[in-house]
Image (tube, rainbow, N blue to C red):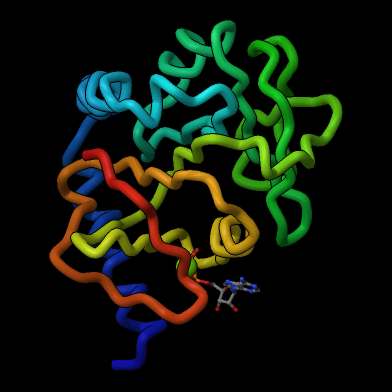
Length: 179
Ligand code: ADP
Ligand code: MG
């Protein structure tokens, strides 16, 4: 099996595992993840944070972002072609549906001061003990993260965490995984 097929095998496996949980269960599990995140110095000390506005099958971020965005600067990704642009989160009223995945994205000025980002909270389909990350297969985050020196934290449910997942040379590793 080549590495692309092997990655797809994990994507399929996680998709099946996710179907065993209701949205409410996933929200409850997500709360436990954010409780852990909030205790970490890399979160406490961070001022500017890239997060993501979750889809139904991901670790739920909405409540976490709404809780913190007045104290810290939160950025969210916006899909434009095959890249992720970043914009400041200024409240749900200032979001509209983006061009992909029908996720809400902030409107307003693009954020380009990448060096000022202290922390990046990254979704993924699967992660492993060596801090590898597997995404949906478009490489969006690999392209974004390859130019960043921020602390990168992957968040996932237990069933998305593996001993070892396939990784290629362009796959950017996380610094920490919280599950
Ligand atoms: P994902 O990270 O979403 O799981 P992959 O790691 O399989 O997806 O990457 C998908 C594709 O994205 C790769 O086949 C590669 O062509 C492209 N890609 C990944 N990283 C980069 C990068 N830094 N620059 C340009 N293209 C990239
Ligand atoms: Mg990748």
